Amino acid sequence: MKSTAAFAAAALLSGADAFWRMPCTSRTGLGRIDPLVEPDEVASHAHTIHGSGNFGWDATYDDLVSADCTSCLVTQDKSAYWTPPMYFVHENGKTEIVKQVGGMLAYYLLYGEKVTGFPAGFRMLAGDTRRRNITVPVPDPETSAWGAEDKTQAALEQKALGFNCMNYGKPGERTLMRHGMPTKEYMDANCVDGIRTEVFFPSCWNGEKDSDDHKSHLAYPDLVIDGTCPEGFDKRVPSMLFETIWDTNAFNGKPGQFVFANGDPTGYGYHGDFIMGWDEKFLQDAVDQCTNPSGLISDCPLFNIQSEPEASTCNFTMPEILKKEDCAGPSDGLCGNVPIQYGEAYASALKPGKTGEATGGLAPKPTEAPEQPTVSYIAATSAVTDKFGGGISVLAVDPNGAAPVASDLPYSSAAEVAAAAVTTTAPPAPAAPALTPAPSEKAPVGKIISTSTYTSAGIVYEVAIEEIAVTVTVEADGSPVPSAAAQVYKKRHAHHHHLRRDREHGLLGRY
Ligand SMILES: *[C@@H]1O[C@H](CO)[C@@H](O)[C@H](O)[C@H]1NC(C)=O
Ligand SMILES: *[C@@H]1O[C@H](CO)[C@@H](O)[C@H](O)[C@H]1NC(C)=O
Image (cartoon, rainbow, N blue to C red):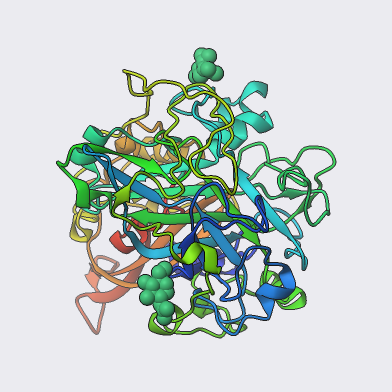
């Protein structure tokens, strides 16, 4: 019998591509405040803020770490994480915030050799609040086909945003598949569990704690999430990804549009901000030791974990001047009276401290929606995966790069295995999630006895160990085995499934 159990164990031991997923289950505040880009003044647009309870106008590392609480579930994490919130603008102009589902998640993905934990004082920003257009091809070509023009920092930055259409009854979309907001019609028809916004931070680093634009001390590796770092950015920090699920379906069928707090209806101007708030040595220890490929914070012995109700009591003190401003709504227009700027031209800058003032003219609303990749959502039917409410069954991949072994897999022929192997190394075309071959009819069906995840070459896989009983009749010299006509033994199969709970979290999908 081929030892798939041993294979799974090997997968668990490969810590090089480890990660943890920090749930910041409630926000610490909502308001026009941004200590990174617009310190000490009323920011031009609202943010939804998570993490340290000592956030503020001009919050520094020292302020954040001295907080007595955090809204993230690991109490040692006093970092601050913020993004613009999403709003719904009704037909009559009334504007209200879209509810966040479960706060946000901050992934710390440990890609690359020798990852350096962020140092004290480290701050960064990803995305461009004024962008209203993308110049990269839609959809992304397969990474193996990316040429020089796909790998410029400008192109990589555009590809580092994701707007995932959520529908738990159907196969999940991969992270960073779509780089702008889908249309309202598409969302009404497909995204019954909301939209998950994703912003992936650059992880190649020049060793500086910050830079004037809070971006240029970092660069993207040439495949966005991993790959080769450009010259001068030879160090690697944890690859950070923010994910937030928005309950857009609450507005299903209602006329109006979704707009981010910065006046962006396209999504292309979505962005994320981060100020590191860990004890520096502790964070490095976590990077070195929290290598369980499950990504669960509970699998890192260093972390002290608090409950969601505890985390939810952590709010920062809103500056007096902002207290009277209601950024949740319903109200007339966006918080700060931010104008909606459609593009496709680069948006005018907004004046901080003012309300509703852009520094330039505003482009009119376009008549055509920007092109977006869409997913047909035709799931391959599968005896193996249907019990999870539909899903994708992906073959096992050896984390060390060895070819999958046919006898371990629910594929009947070597050709199928080879075809499947190709789909795991190249990203599937966004329009065709059903690329994964359906398992053959011989696919075993048994009890899932454990699940785990691991990453390999930028792909996070979920491994479900399935135990099935196989009856084998062993004959020697044409006669039955003396003591028993048959032996029953347990055989373990490693399968990969997108389980429903993990499809809420984008990285547990294929790239
Ligand atoms: C914390 O702030 C949120 C708004 O962001 C509010 O709903 C909640 O009541 C606040 N909690 C406390 C304990 O002040
Ligand atoms: C927007 O992007 C497209 C390519 O995707 C480009 O052709 C067009 O010129 C861009 N528009 C502006 C105003 O930059």
